[in-house]
Image 1: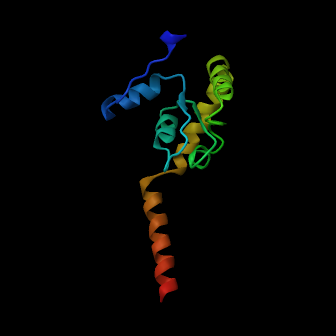
Image 2: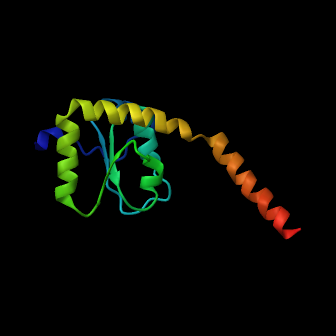
Image 3: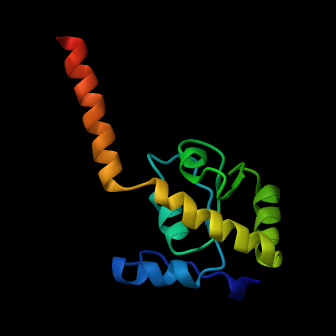
Length: 125
């Protein structure tokens, strides 16, 4: 199984999309993330995602990823096995991911930040 896993190290932006598109899944068991951009990047490429059920990852992933305890290697392995062997699950995660990523945009983010500032301005007077 060692030949099935490739640890790429740093990947520049030009190659990143190809890496996501050619991956069977993104395994992202981070213990802490400020946001979790790799989750959305993979989903935007149609790549199934397995990510941690902690920090911001569940909110970003929604129902479009398998969520795991990042410190439970048995659970991680089981989710990996399922994604690699269940074509229907891979397709479902891919479809849900493509839909989920549509909820996020820089424009929407900017509008929400402006709304917070407007609310704060109104409360100060």
